[in-house]
Image (cartoon, rainbow over all chains, first blue to last red; front, side):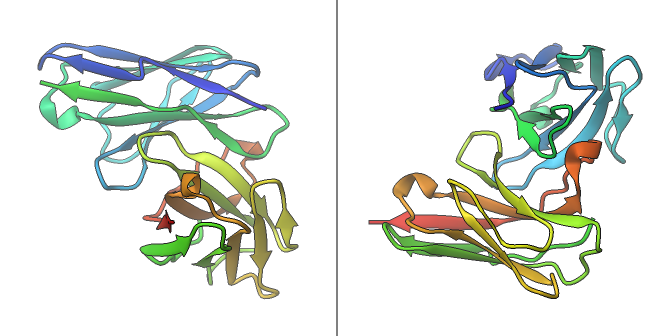
Length: 115
Length: 112
């Protein structure tokens, strides 16, 4: 079945630094990927839709200059948290739909801790 | 996306069937019912989906009422590894790359 891989699974960084999270579709091509964020004991919240070869679409309230999304190929989308602060600490999850499939496949998530 | 309502939490004894209900009274004709689950600190896992007919796969069964206003996910023989948060989502077919909106889900605790 379709597999979505995220890297790193865990990252700790200092406040003010930037962190990049990768999302790869391992055995299929994905023109669209989705980025979610999940705070402790809360549900997943959609942050943005990543479109291959074009600009990402951000949900209301998500700062596009802070959460940079690049979808340069059909198998890779990256999320960069710029100038991270402790309040950005969260579980970031990506998902994608394989062409011809009708379900979203999710990655295992990346836990970001900003000190 | 139609709003869904699920109980906050449920318990189930290991080996018994777990029946997780979901209300989606405003579901539209082209919206499917999707079920995902999220085990602690992992990404959501797809379980099953359906439009109006009951569905069964190796993981679970999905029973959708005739008026489509509610559904039940059935795990026939729950194990401790089925402890997770289960999300019921009503959305159009994600083959069109439709994003999914997650509610609060049902926290299922399977006990010995």
